[in-house]
Image (cartoon, rainbow, N blue to C red; front, side):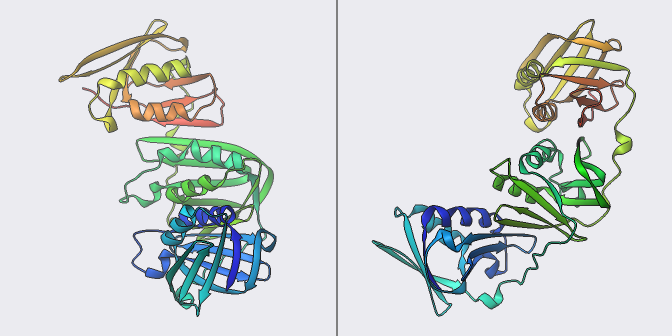
Length: 373
């Protein structure tokens, strides 16, 4: 294999596939990137056996193909070398499949390589049931929900995003059992088979880093144990989490005693300032008290002091009450909305707090209150 290519084209491909590399791999070859060059162009692929990313560079984007072949180069080294080389054109050649020579007019790097026979044979195939949506819409869905996934491996299913499709309705849910995010969109086209899968959050986060062109089409292919995303010249395949995701439909109330209409930015800023005096940022508890047409946000720390802020809101229904919650959870939930105002819906001091743009909005955030007595 021997070819010459522009640095920026190769670097873009390497940056994308390197997201599938893992420093924790005990199988050495999984730290490598597979280069496969033929008459059609160059494919790059990396995998950790859980996540696989493959990208293709067409022959028209390669300056010169002298000979075809394949080689597995250590990922972090080839990425660092290409990133830091000051030259616009790079030549890569393999020597008997065991070494790679990366050269420019003034520099030459010799890298030991892995045996291509040791690289996993990954099946990246499509099916005849594609689900299509704009990549920007998928990014929005993930950004509005993924922060609610759990980081505790003791409940593995909660470390993923639950994606369900019934007819033309796509529903995405994430929860860590203390809060919940739910987003519903219409696909505009019925899907023949219902889908109910759980995608690891860490893999979805890597995917949305790749989706730079929000107007490009993203195609999903769902299988029993994996999901394949197709975006421009990139194939992104993730394994799924095994098991049945908890039924969260019953967690969100349909009737509420109290409803508040608040300015999102003002409310966020008040909660943010009130949380400054709480010492433990993971569990920074603030109290909300509804009094007439105001809400009073307070927090206190024996070592630091106390803060109290008053904000005028519109009481849509209900009466005076008090409720405590995590400021961190509330602020992350508020950041998922793009509207000027949100509705906060309550059923007493021990029932879940529900936040929506409108009472029938397609995005729902749920936060469990915290007892402070």
